[in-house]
Amino acid sequence: MKLTSYWLDTAPSFVASPAAAMPGMVDAVIVGGGFSGLSAALRLRELGASVVVLERERVVGEASGRNGGHVNNGLAGSFSMACKTMGEDKATALYKVFNKAVDTVETIISTHAIACDFVRCGKLKVGNLPAHHAALQADYEQLCKSADPDVRLISYAQIHDELRSDLFNNGLIYPHSGRMHMGRFGVGLAQAVLKAGGLIFENTPMISIKFGQGCFEVITPQGKIVAKSVLMATGTSRHAPSWFRQRIMPVGSFIVATEPMDAATLKQVMPGGQNVVTMQNIHNYFRATADNRLIFGGRASFSRSRTTTDIVSGHMLLAAMRRTLPDLPDVKVEYCWGGDVDMTVDRLPRAGQWNGIYYTMGYSGHGTQMSVYMGQRMAEAMAGMPDTNPLAGRSWPKIPFYGLASYVLPVVGAYYRAKDYVQNFRA
Ligand SMILES: Cc1cc2nc3c(=O)[nH]c(=O)nc-3n(C[C@H](O)[C@H](O)[C@H](O)COP(=O)(O)OP(=O)(O)OC[C@H]3O[C@@H](n4cnc5c(N)ncnc54)[C@H](O)[C@@H]3O)c2cc1C
Image 1 (cartoon, rainbow, N blue to C red):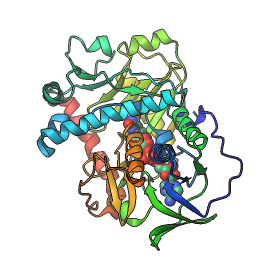
Image 2 (cartoon, rainbow, N blue to C red; image 1 turned 180 degrees about the vertical axis):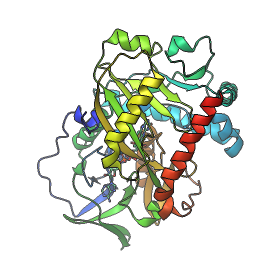
Image 3 (cartoon, rainbow, N blue to C red; image 1 turned 90 degrees about the horizontal axis):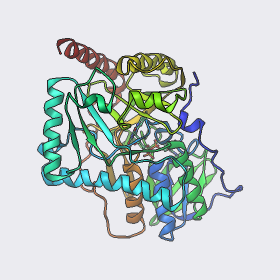
């Protein structure tokens, strides 16, 4: 079992520009070479701005290259619940932004001819408890009414036409969702930035930032860059100023990729071919790849140390995969990796300005599409275009006791795992 991301291991290498010197002055510095930062850099170049991307390690080496590979539309949580908490109009508008975000990914792929196996496969959300059924029914009715008349409710009688699993008895299909090879997309996006005239420096962290003389001074190990504007696209923001760290909780999630199977076998197990997301408290997400592997993810070990727990998590996920898809043949797991999700308290992203510094982050495990979309919106604001940030004005309080959150997480995880066990036992 390789303890590395399948997406990164099977992507082409990023070919940087031949030894460019760090410029002393640019229009925009982007901190972070994930999807948010790269998408922003590409848009800034389209708008004629000079741009430097600083990446502390390798491009798309964090969440963007370590995720589950779903490019799903819709909100991460329940749509009907969102209508209750934020109002129907706002929830509907946000839902439609996620649709546009998937369209944006698709447009970038075709404009820049990025070979990354993008396909609109749909998403199937599945549940097994009466409470899940009630939530799916409520979402279905509310979505048909205000945001997405194309969703389909799947009954007990139909579920096996979509997914061969006895664990679930109802589901909801979101046909506009897609998937792609994350490493190929990310490297393709980075190459498009270079081709458009942007500069990307890997292994180059932003060490500090200060405002002076109407512009920002960004300090890196290679020297200082003066910029008119700066975007923090730093994901979990572990290496960003403390204002960001206090608002984002990094939560580990883990993934395994099987060896390739023959197409017919996989089709038999997942006849609908959608990305699948389950509804337990400790849920799983899975999908097929273009070379007929199964990519299966979820919370596994709740230990605080990601690197040492990957192998433990791999075994836990393999067991969950076998429970979920008992008809799967005895395939080997070839890859196992983990990544940190940039979680906010309400699981909704945030974007705006803090002390004049632009930021976009907090996608909470549902950001392969929004990061790309929001990167573009923030770039437009940085270039002085009218503000089209759909997340503008959302308050963003600190996480209570944020310093202790990672210690409390294993306890919370154990509680929810026990809760799932009891609920399933009763059902
Ligand atoms: C395990 C896992 C599974 C997921 N599955 C899905 C999924 O299936 N579908 C979905 O929609 N979303 C999923 N997500 C979420 C999605 O991957 C992210 O929302 C998205 O990739 C965020 O992109 P980003 O560019 O904002 O952040 P990142 O990809 O994390 O990029 C931030 C970059 O900033 C760099 N950086 C940080 N600090 C500094 C600094 N000081 N100087 C320079 N560089 C710095 C980091 O090295 C990193 O490369 C998942 C995430 C994880 C972790």
